[in-house]
Length: 231
Ligand SMILES: *Cc1c(COP(=O)(O)O)cnc(C)c1O
Image (cartoon, rainbow, N blue to C red; front, side, top):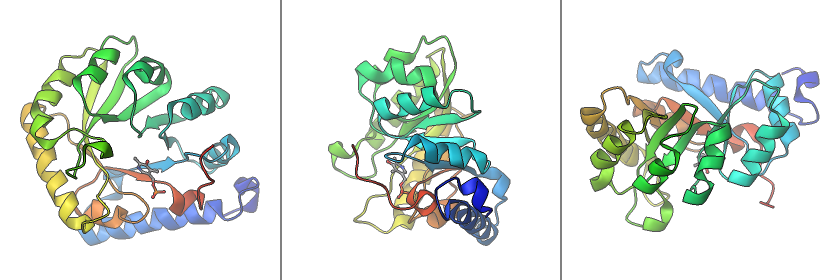
């Protein structure tokens, strides 16, 4: 909107507002209230200055998918009131470090990862990532493991299980994938009734995700613009 708040990132405010009204439209179409939706702006590979400019524009929730990059940005922007969401695959040996700055970890997909952070001294919100493909390299727990993993998270004192997370596969229409995810969310809620959140929906499929019940959207390039090459 105002060029002053774009702080060297032309169009950033306009794109943010476009996505916000796209979310409002999709909610209206789905008969949902936009109060049910948390927008997380995914800032991976972008400079820390872009995250600061987003904060100026009122963004509070930002997402990153690499521990080192996320840690450095969180440190540099520690004085801002930001909530860092870790959305990428997380190595077990990096988990405790990530859990120091992360408000939420969206990529919990195995018991060893839970065990690594179960006794942290601060509370961390977590989502169980479900793999919607047959390819184990995509990240996420196999659907058959969901209930057991959810019960494991419930026993971890530091972890607050919010719900499920997934990335829609490229090779399938998003509505079908998100419908499966809604079914997995129901299964997790059967063992963890408080785990009502669904983290799903990115630049190209957030409208479909809203229609299928998503509560946490992880949107990057529609707001930030094209991502620089990873360093
Ligand atoms: C990069 C990323 C996003 C955002 O992707 P866009 O297509 O740029 O919106 C969302 N979720 C995860 C897990 C990501 O890695």
